[in-house]
Length: 246
Image (cartoon, rainbow, N blue to C red; front, side, top):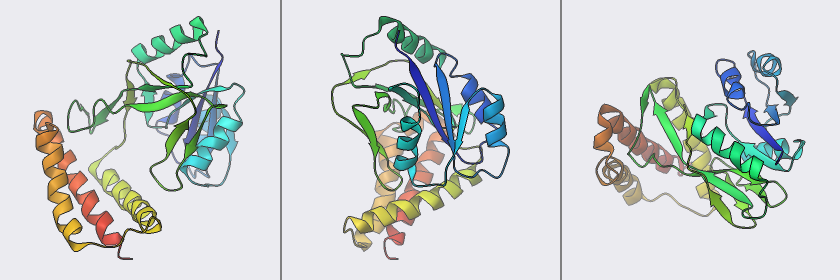
């Protein structure tokens, strides 16, 4: 039986952390690393059965690697506070644990299904949005200093088929705030890589992104939600490119 630790990094997630922890009942422990929440996240997570550690924010990758380093077991399921394993994924991981097969892969990817403002998204380039989240910490670690952290794996990556559910935004206003935050980080990352402001990229990037999401990736099949996703994605590209100037 493979022992499994779930890790979650948090900041002001009191309204959803308990439900996220409850979805991880198949794990042997849940480790929450909080970066200074001003609400009841820490107390609620502890009451829900998680082992809670508090640590100042050091970046996405650093925070996730710290959480993995403090886990009791080598195999880690890393999820965000706005994510929950679906029943099919939980059962699939449980069967893998029972098989005890740690040699076939160093990590596993899983499809992520997004609930966008109350509607499940099946197109728009958002599904299947495969993420590598189950991994052996002795053979994998998080990389990336800004917003696009990725798991670097030394070994084969297997595939799971159950969905990881994602609930990223409570409202359009929250999505706008997230875009404001992430475009600042993304622009800083691009500047560090040597990217300079290009007016043609700034003008052509947003409409091309919209067409890609809404037409080429069949976002129109997601109805009004698909239109919003394409529009907000184009807005993200526009703001990111403008912020490269700074």
